[in-house]
Image (tube, rainbow, N blue to C red):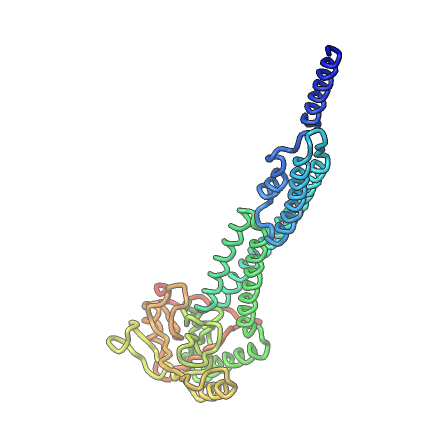
Length: 381
């Protein structure tokens, strides 16, 4: 009996030891924090401005590996502790961590390239905008052109803000728009200024002036020449240049006048048709020109026939040389403005019928010179 009892005790003890051994886990599973770590790190450390599609692909890859690791943990956790093994789960987590590291490195490299591209594109945009501003100033851009440049300035500030906050893709895109828009405005200004370098046009202007000066000499009379590009009025008497005055022109001073409301100062050979002063003018003193003349009307009809102006456009009129100038800016609706004292001085030299020739530009021919201001005119300037 005693021997049998001992055997039972031994068997029971062995059974308890066996069950205890089977219930003690030989391996421990990754913690919940470890199971979430690769994906969380990828999302948190991803550089800003990475394209969403690119980031989503990398997130999907790391997320899939983490899910597989979690499934491996769950599958092993249903086995007896002694039989559990989490080697596969740890391998999957290590692969997920490596994929996250690789993705972050790739994104950092790409981000560095994007940053360099954004900085380069911004520098090009800034240079293009500066060039457009300079060209626009020379071409005296009209309202639409000035507004376009303001929009480019606003867009450039937005691109700089995107660069600062690390959104390099947006910075490249916006800077590209500024670059394109500024170059367009620069080309528009260049087209406006091109007529000042056109040899045939310049030769025609020079011929007009030469004929006006020759007529002044032949008739011992006074003549006025307005050089729009030089913003000057030249006073001739008996073929000799007496003095020059700075002038303000129309808001659109470079082109020739085509129609009413274009704010351009006309080009051509005119005469003073009326001298206005006192209550007959709002500009202190004014010399009304006989614009439009027959050449202006012919050019107007041609422009309308070619579709350059609308059928409803009118040719306009009331072009004057008048006072209240001296502002150092172009502000009239197409007239030529001098200071009031300068108009008072000119009034003593002109009369109805005095020739007034207006040209886009007047390159000085060899031998040309600007004599000093005549006696009595010094107080005018």
